[in-house]
Amino acid sequence: MSKGVIILGSSNSKGNTAKLVSYIKEHTSFDIIDLKEKEIQHFDYEFKNQDDFNTLFKEIVNQYDTIVFATPVYWYSMSGILKVFFDRISDFLYKEQDFGRKLRGKRTAMISCSGEQDIEASFYIPYNKSVEYLGMEAIGTVHGCVNDGALTKVTKERLEKLTIKLVAEKATVDSNKE
Ligand SMILES: Cc1cc2nc3c(=O)[nH]c(=O)nc-3n(C[C@H](O)[C@H](O)[C@H](O)COP(=O)(O)O)c2cc1C
Image (cartoon, rainbow, N blue to C red; front, side):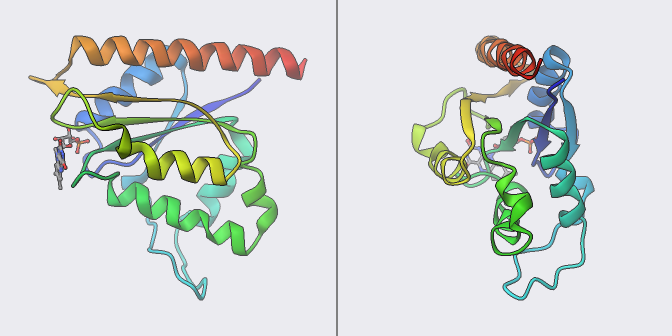
C-alpha cells in the first residue's frame, strides 16, 4: 500500500496552515510531520549537524510515496522552516546519495496559506524547480486562506480537488504495485 505524508512548515502548529493540513489529512488519511516539533539546523557545508534531519529524511523517503508540503506565506516566500528543510535535502545530494535518489518518482504537492485568497504563480517557482530537479512528480499546488477561524469556501473547493487527485494517484500506485 502506498502511503502519503504532509510536511507542515508553519511557525504555528495549530495555526491557519495547520487547518488546511487537517482538511487534507481528513480526506486522505495521510500522516502529518510537523517540522516545528523537530530540531533541524541550517545547512552546513561541513555536514557537522547533529539534529533530527538525518533520521527524519530517511524515514520519509523509506515510508512514503507521496509528499505534500504545506507552508504559510511569510514575506512572499515559503516559511523559513520549510526552506531550511529543502536546504537540508542537499545533505543527501552530497552524502548518502542513495537516500537522496529515493525522492525520484515520488509524487508531491504544495499547499500554501496566507491572509489572501489568491497568490501569484511566481510563489511556487522555488518549489516547482526544486521538485523538478529532484525528479519528483508534481501533482499540484493549492493556495488558501482562513477567515474567522475557518477555511473559506474557495479554499475548501481547491483542497477538495487536490485530495481527489491525491487519492486517485494513490489508487493508481497501489494497482501498479499489485
Ligand atoms: C512573518 C510573517 C510574514 C508574513 N508575510 C506575508 C506575506 O508576505 N503575504 C501575505 O499575504 N501574508 C503574509 N503573512 C500572513 C500569513 O501568511 C497568514 O497569516 C497565514 O495564514 C499564517 O499561517 P500560519 O498560522 O500557519 O502561520 C505573514 C505572516 C507572518 C507571521
